[in-house]
Length: 257
Length: 144
Image (cartoon, rainbow over all chains, first blue to last red; front, side, top):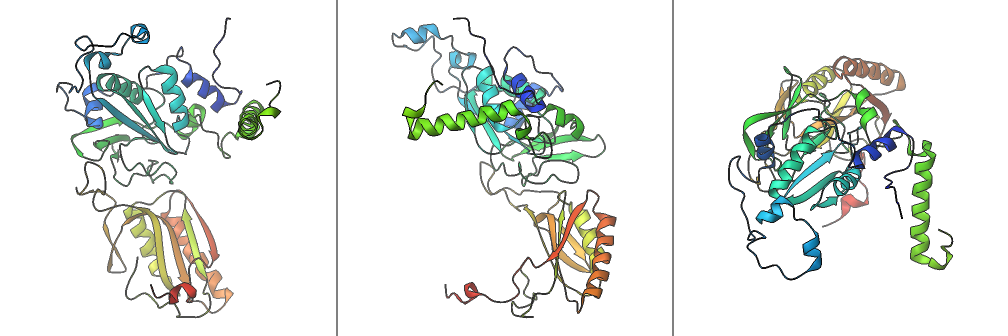
């Protein structure tokens, strides 16, 4: 049966953005170019230029059991080389950050292979083999889902996503991994994602204006686009709620769905 | 901030008015110092409490645990000639006013608003009420 993949209902701006970010056919806009070595420094798993550490033998050397699924699935580069699994974690402010953790999970699973991701209220971790992670991390820092002021790269102590912004418009970070450069009007990372000081300052560029962020966001807010104003999104939420509740407690009442 | 000089819980036995100033943005140490010094000259202020988001002196978890945090806003500011260590990025002030009647209260409120308007760039929300304890309750008599 020919099936056209669907992503998210609704006609409001956040609903359209959710569809865009999830659809792997949409190429996301590249807004900045942070050097790969700097991405590696911010993540802090290895030094730039250092070899990838491996804890498994390369797949070709290992004796894989006879398995039709293993023959079917093409391994990602990191898996081929037996890389370690490493992570990057983003925190997204509730103040109209371009994307929020739940949509990150949808986007990651829709766009990338070989990833494990975990959603929490304000942060989203992605775990993947190291060399693939670096490519993905650079893409995610460079593209439109990242805003220097409202998205934080934080491996631990992520507190701040629901706090008021500071006077420069930056999301609060108790460990101050990034600071505001008042001369260049840019955000600069001075610590890596677990707050170990970096030996050089890494600029991730200028934050976007609030007016633009409101057009880019996936976040429904009472002072932005209220989810209840998008009828289709509301009905979709209610339908899932109804089916889950009935499915859990009175499954015989689920008829014609 | 707990201060040994702070008034005892049973100082009045009646609720003096408290002004709550909730800022729209978290304030830098510099702005906090300016606001406090502008408030310091207003008469009838009995005490000012502040709160906000905590800035630890040390990194308290993860691989960098034990390293100095070096947060630029964790500073010692000078208010009315006295040094105050800021452990928070301040987002709220609670100003207790020792006033006799509403007429004086209104005058002081206007002065507080003028001080805030001058220094708090991104706006704030001001309310008058009572936001902290003013007499001991059962909890204060617990032995342990």
